[in-house]
Image (cartoon, rainbow, N blue to C red; front, side, top):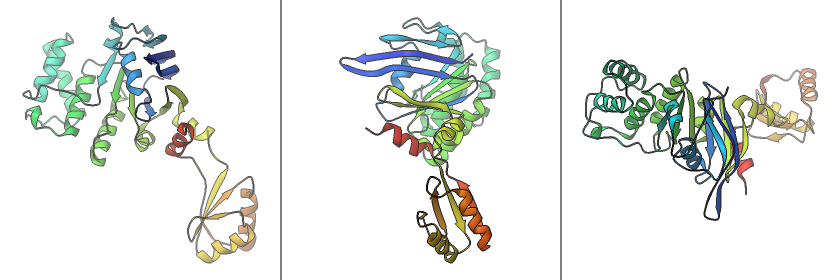
Amino acid sequence: MDTLHITHLKKCFGSKEVLCDLNLSVPRHSIFGFVGKNGAGKTTTMKAILGLLKPDSGTIFVEGEKVLYGQTPTNHHIGYLPDVPSFYSYMTPVEYLKLCGQVCGMTNHQIAVRSQELLSLVGLQQETHRIKGFSRGMKQRLGIAQALLHQPKLLIADEPTSALDPAGRREILDILTNASVYTTVVFSTHILSDVEQVCTHAAILNEGKIVMENSIEQIKTLHRRKEFSLKLSSPVHAQEILRKFPNAEKTDAIHLLFKEETTPMSAVLQYLAEKRIPLEKIERRTPSLESLFMEVTQA
């Protein structure tokens, strides 16, 4: 069973249709990248999952339970990190997590044990200072700890790395990866490199519609172009091959790119063997998620 399952979700604000018959399935213990431009409908979808926004039509199930607007028992399965988390700045991390645990109905013993585990997970176990002195990255890490406190089946993070520097982004991505051992992670983003680094699955949202969804591996396999590249040992060898195969594209002095519909790989390899031309590297071209994103979101 999928942790999250959405069928035919629609939402309009006035005459603008923000979500257009959206369908989405998120496997258990996956790290699911929800990708889209600003305004594509990512946050609207998340608010609907949390029961904070009433869809015009469609159904949402979390752990097999139907999400109902204004009645949110399904939220005991969900941990949520908004794009800009807010805290009581006069508290320490331990004090804040204790408050959150009490709101969730946890015992003091459960709160103490769980807080220690989570602060260690997010790298804040040594922090005894008040939250008001925390950096943006430290607040994001504390927000993840808060979202995981009640051991949810689904962690939803809205653009968790968008305002962080490269080191801070890497820290958050590592935390989300580690958290996926215990829960299913869904995070929205428009940073495609983050998705390629850590996600097992992804969906691309464009103008309220899912235009691509699958495991990262399957997305790249299904959209693989019939291209391959060669790295030669010298520019002289590259020029020799170009004379034999003029349809090849020279990307730099020693790299050549071939399209298999005009130049079969077998023909190139045969020529290299016959002429005893040394080869440094040959590889099939795999499309990047960024290139696919640009293809499917072009107006």
